[in-house]
Image (cartoon, rainbow, N blue to C red; front, top):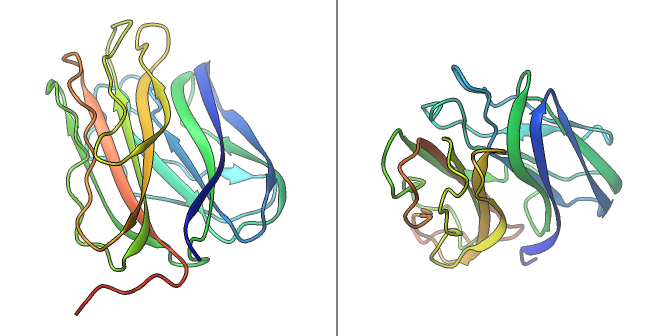
Length: 222
């Protein structure tokens, strides 16, 4: 079964203690993910596990190794989910700022879908990149990438991720809100994966990338 994008809901929270996001009509057995770039200041947020009102089991990926000036880039996911309208709730601390997207895909494995992942960060580079993953285990996979940019500019100058990605959401304002980009692509051949977001203003950033296996995808050549 080929991987397919189903639907998304973007969200923005400014100085909130939790955030709840709704997707209507989620199909049984599908794959859900939250891509988010929360900012808390200070030591920055940890990647805490979301919950939802369908009792789906949520999983977190490894967070980037630096808080990027008080923010971070997170990818969380649930496999083989229940059907129906689904509200996911995320909590990254007290008074956090966050842009993000809650997204549904079909065609993903219903267990052990996560394949390879990596992350990257900088306190001043103007060319944010996710780092490069190991080689994917099979031909057909979903690649999710997330960027967080921290600072005080009204326009971070973020480009949507390049090299075949589709943008799910981008927020440029890091003065009133928090800036970030959330992107995906579906691949049909094994290989390493990475994401880049053009040239931004000189602000701290963190980036995350993870790949997920399709149902019945062809394994990599030995």
